[in-house]
Length: 236
Image 1 (cartoon, one colour):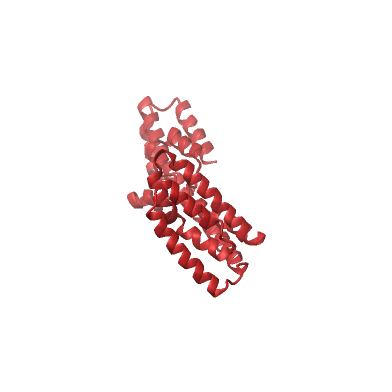
Image 2 (image 1 turned 45 degrees about the horizontal axis):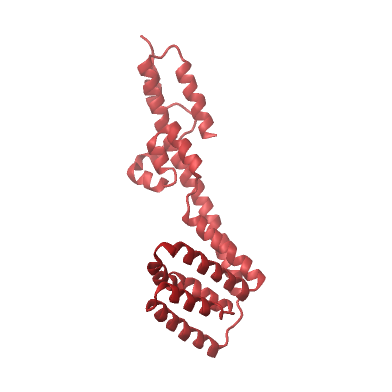
């Protein structure tokens, strides 16, 4: 809608025979500035609403995961934590090939949802030394170990908890990602310029740089500045 409004107004300016060439350029630049502000306001408002919904969905999904998590025998949990600490040390002291095998053997023993959750929080630390030593095979090692961990989650979780965990992981990834797709960023740059494409997914940063723009109210009525710009663009 914003793009359509921009293109329509831009066409009106370009087709107006009462404007000078220089006047048309100034009016178009001014239009781009106003529409950039509107885009930033839209981005800020929409992304805020989207993140609020995602956070709510993530919280509900995590509640389901925790509610479906069976209690773990205390002795078994102590054994697991002890073995996890040992594995971290063994992996750290091994080369990539041996470290991968140690971690693989360990993951194959995991059969509790609580243990899978703990491994998830430690996964980067566990695979870090392996990938650091794997060289050109690091991508293959990461893929194999990630796939194995996915199997651990499926094996250790109740279906409802696993589905809820997938939702929680999706919402977490969405929260960390950009709100607008690359094609929108590209179009923003084509129509409105570099400033729009640079900040369309970072509106808060834009308003930190241009705090006065946060007060702009696009109510459909022409401001005195716009009226004066149109008057100055006229052929004398």
